[in-house]
Amino acid sequence: MRSVPIGEAARQSGVKVPTIRYYEHIGLLPAPKRSEGNRRHYETSDLRRLAFIRHSRELGFDIEAIRTLLTLQDNPSQPCATADTIAQARLADVVQRIRSLTALKAELELMVEGCRHGKVGECRVIEVLADHSQCEHARH
Amino acid sequence: MRSVPIGEAARQSGVKVPTIRYYEHIGLLPAPKRSEGNRRHYETSDLRRLAFIRHSRELGFDIEAIRTLLTLQDNPSQPCATADTIAQARLADVVQRIRSLTALKAELELMVEGCRHGKVGECRVIEVLADHSQCEHARH
DNA sequence: CTTGCTCCTCTAGTCGCTAGAGAATGTAGC
DNA sequence: GCTACATTCTCTAGCGACTAGAGGAGCAAG
Image 1 (cartoon, each protein chain N blue to C red):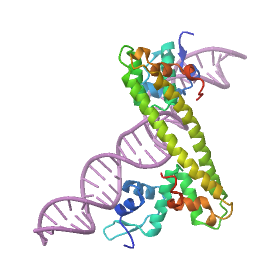
Image 2 (tube, rainbow over the protein chains, first blue to last red):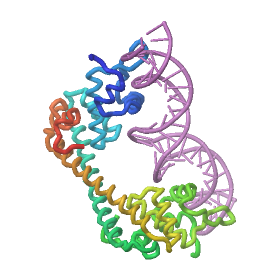
Image 3 (cartoon, protein in one colour):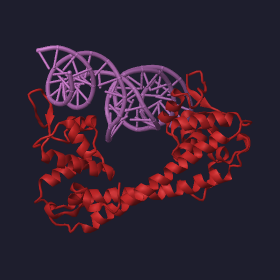
Image 4 (spheres, rainbow over the protein chains, first blue to last red):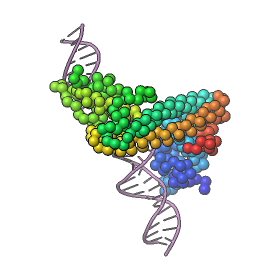
């Protein structure tokens, strides 16, 4: 149980097999040792790195950001300003996204509520889509 | 001023020139008339359709949904159940997205707040990324 | 008639995977 | 050993919704 094949790594990390290979391909995950039959075998350190990547992706960091964060993790004596900046940028992005989605939600709700389930010709959904000015309150 | 070239259509609609051509290419926007010099010229009806597409994209509908919505708009005597269903599905999606982004926001805030701006080795940002269990409260 | 803008078509690239083909390897039961 | 099946391998191509760039033609003003 020192090292596990890719399927087991996938199971443990929650990252799909082709995605793990993809991460190796783009240089995010180091190429692991191979068995005699040319199969990848992952050590605990690889699995940790994979978990880091997965968690970062879940939080919405893009691959380049993760690349930077991993490099930082590999150099623990550096100042963490870069990591902080990346996280803050991501936070700002999330906040912005929530804002615009909330505006969207209000508008979609109005559309859906306004629909009287009759003919398309009188449908508020279609009407609003055709005429942006009908929903100026939530500017987007 | 009956019909306008593609640049002007872009300006009026807020859709970029290559995107307008792309919409034509995928059959979302009908191919407009051409001038002698082979330039596209858009009528008011094209501009209306383009505005519809743009507004729909802003609201996050995907191209296939917009294709359906446009077909509905072209047939106003049909029942609008389909339009309603599409809008409701989109609303449900937005609501879900807001939920998960809000959880994410909480987590990113904790990370960023926890960062003491020292070395990477003690940085909470990196630490949390490496260890998902440190943020179980917001399950994602 | 030249300058500079707009427009044309076409191909290829973006991001982060995902799907599928076709072949080899590993494992469990008989 | 042999067979069946699961897992793995490499490779290429596709997804959505554009975006970028090459290389060329048209057009309006000075």
